[in-house]
Amino acid sequence: MALSDLPDFIRRNYEIHEWRHASAVLRTDFRQEWDDIVVVLTELRVRKTHIAVGGGAKSKVAGAIDKAFTERGWRERKFATQIRVDDAVIDSPTHKVDCFKNGIGVEIEWNNKTEFYDRDLNNFRLLFDLRALNVGVIITRCDELQSIFDALGRGSSYGQSTTILSKLLRKLAGGGGGGCPVLVFGITKSLYDENS
Image (cartoon, rainbow, N blue to C red; front, side):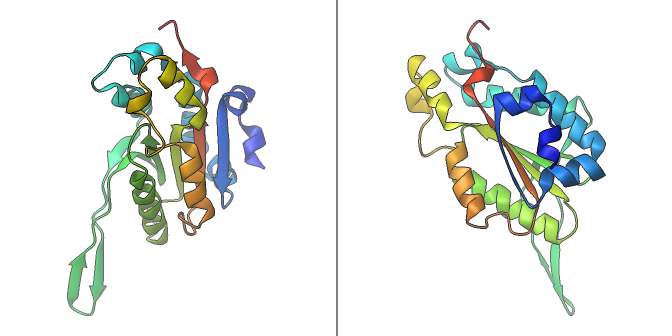
C-alpha cells in the first residue's frame, strides 16, 4: 500500500484517505507528481496571520498551497469537452482544476461552501471517464481546526457549512468520486504555527 510509503511527517500531520488505490497509482505511475505533492505537504504551515487577519484570510492558505504547486510546474487547467451525437455537438465544459500536471489534478478547498466538494468530485469523475485525469487529489482542512479559529475570534468565518474533511468523506463514501482514484489530505492542528 503506497500510503505507507508517504514520509512519516505527512502521515503524522495529515489525515489521509484514498479511494480506488489512488496512492499506488500516483507513486507507481506518476512518481514526479507524487514527489511534488510530498514536498508541498511537507513544507505547508498554517500561519496565525493566515487566519487572524480579516478580509481574504480564507484564500491565504489556499494561495500558499497553489503557489507551491505552481513553482513545481503545476498549472490551473480548464478542459474543453463536448458531447457529440451524430452531427449534433453540445459543449460540456468542466470546471477548472486548481493545479494540474501530467494527468494529476489537485483541488484545494480551505473555506468554501460544501457544494464545492460536489463540483470537484463530479469534475474528477468526468475527466477520469474521458481519460484526461488519472488521479484526483483534494487538500482540505480537518474539522479539528475549528477550535483554533474559535480561539482567534474567527470561528464565525469558518463553520460546519464550509469545506471540512468530515463532509468530504461522506460524499466520497457515497460514491461521489465515481471510478476516479481520489487521494485526500486533511490539514490537522499540528501544522498550525501560532508564531507566524
